View (tube, rainbow, N blue to C red):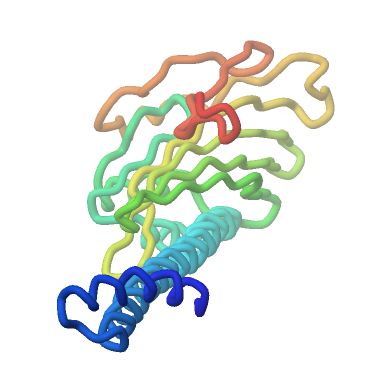
Length: 237
């Protein structure tokens, strides 16, 4: 700092000699300009740190939101599940089509039935990849659901799905804007995946969707890669 001031003061003193300005005044002006520049740089750094802190806070909140969804689904807490959505939110699970609006989401969820003796409905939420828009109000997340479902003495299945979801912050609270679960496989517990896969859950005949399935695809043993909301973090492609 002192060296920089000295380097500035020498030419300014020479200018002052010709312009009638004292060397002290010239050095003071240089120091003021330097302080202003450093203050601006510090303000930029503080803003960047604040943005990083907010992004980290939002990342945790979205992960907690998605995990809460999974725990509520496990126990068929359908009203609690629905409360996680925006009023104009939508849900698309597997190949059953799109249900739009909070009350349609609620109707779909309740249609899945209740947890009772002899039923299992676990949906673990794993592998989060979350990106938050620069506006801090919209975000995207990719998760994996690992499922154990079945009914005592009737059926038992392993299942896997990939979520590509959208989120929106409203009044400081993150909510699910769009939930889209792509089924990867369903397999019989006793047969295992080396014996092929089970068909996906069929469409709900008595509760038709508002829109058809976004993408038509086949489950394991066929291969389908759900589209990614993000670019490769290394190559940018």
